Image (cartoon, rainbow, N blue to C red; front, side):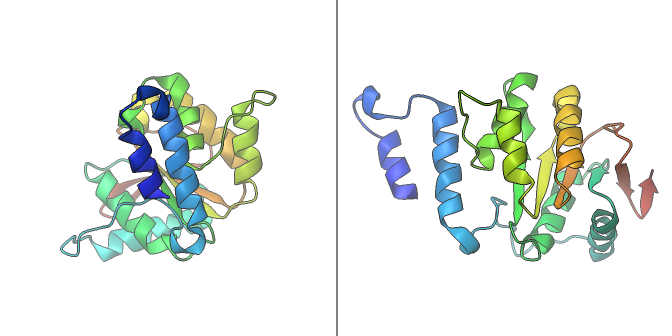
Length: 195
């Protein structure tokens, strides 16, 4: 499936290529979903020399067991999120999925980016948010939202919707500031948890 996508990207005639980057993201999401239990998520491979404080990882995992939303506020939040996601990926039926928001082109694209990564396709007869929630309410997964401070309003709206409708979805956000959602637990590092 990946080879087919790459070959289509390399077509000489532009009309034979994907029409947009969104179509490429969707094709990649579909290819990942087709792998089934082999690929439960899209987390990058963590290098073998990657060292994390196991105590921090355990603390964040404990927070995620009791709270649906945990926001990492420390300077090394991304690597901690990846380490937590790698540990939880095999324990969750639908794995761990990473959405890096620094590549998103505006707040209006946050929802579309998340949906695309999760393989949820737009339907002209139904709002994308509804399709995403219908898909997620049946899933048991960890959603890692990296750099939420870039589009905090859009992230807050999306996270509140997911938390209100999808009890088996856990969200691990990285941000330089709190999302200020009532259900949010914040972790600063070194065992410091902020309610």
